[in-house]
Image 1: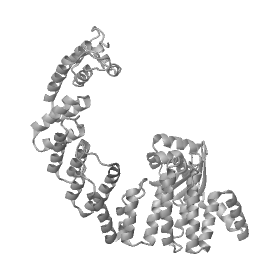
Image 2: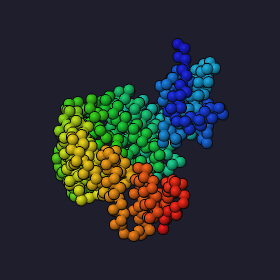
Image 3: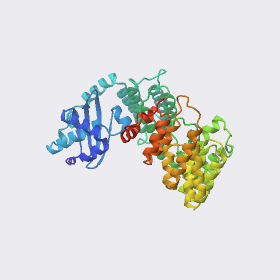
Image 4: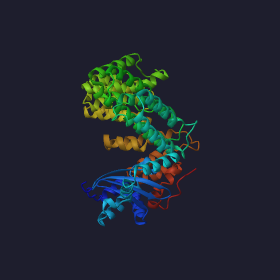
Length: 506
């Protein structure tokens, strides 16, 4: 047997980049404190236990700057690369520098020890462990069933195992979810083992059953990320079984379409794309036919028209399916038409205009943006749609129309951010125009009710433009909000003119 390849060091700066400075520092502390126990040190994989508030299993993979891994800690589920993986990388680097042989790891010692035992001793050890470990028992039970049973017996036994593993008893709480998920994973692994055993068609039937059971069970768990892992695993299992024992393309298309439309968890989202090589031209044509027929039954949505709940649920899925096929054909007009069937609000018009722009249809983008503004001109302006339309108008040389649009938006939704944007687009002439309008608006404002501070924006704009004297004058005459007073800006005025009376706050 050839000697195992020597492990390679992990690049420290890459570890820092993956984890971030704070997690890297904590991982370095764990490493220095000796909280890492390396179980297996291989050429491109390190298995370790890291002791903290709890003991976590960490696997670091790759070498040099190509690094990945996984960890059982909650931080890995939430944020990705964690302090425990940093600690493992630094500890592995020290072991490699010290010349520790891969064969010196605890797992390799255990393997050598087990190889020296006779079969009866190994059987006794495993059965003893299986009596106390439900997950191990389930793995061994299914493996032995797969070796001995015929297809019908296997189907019955495995379906029962899926039912047992996914049973929740009404609810699986946070403390129990890891054990529950491990039991489900064990069954999925056993089903996957049927594929190389020549029973892929049977495995597909079991995968379909597992998809339904897991989806239903997750609604009764505090899944905390474990559910996502199970959904990914069972979706991958379904795909693998279809590749190993492809169903009839039309039948597969119909089954996948139904699953995608009814899928609560997104297991079968974009199924036509994922299964395209298995569906082939015949299956894809059937998938497209089903989606097109369902889409054509839905009414177009225009402003003020509401869809039934079912249609609201189906519509985005059907849009995604048909957009995949249209994109596959390179049919931009069809992709525009799909989006143009759902135009209920300014956001829909913005989304369509942005798509047209990304597809190089600049004139169409401007037309849709202007249509959206015209249809909703009596409503609160959508600032994003206004900005897009103004930019396209300026690019088309229609400066006066763009300026009118931006001015109308500013006078209806005045804000400092919008002021900054419009001033940058239209130039310095906008400044005096806007300040005069804000002064006029302030002069006409009714006495405040205790929560209204109409002078705030004028003062902020004047400070933005360096008009300190004007800002001071406005601040002395009108009430300012606590937010502006506490921002420190009025203190700038007081420092400049310390002899002036205090700014009014009531």
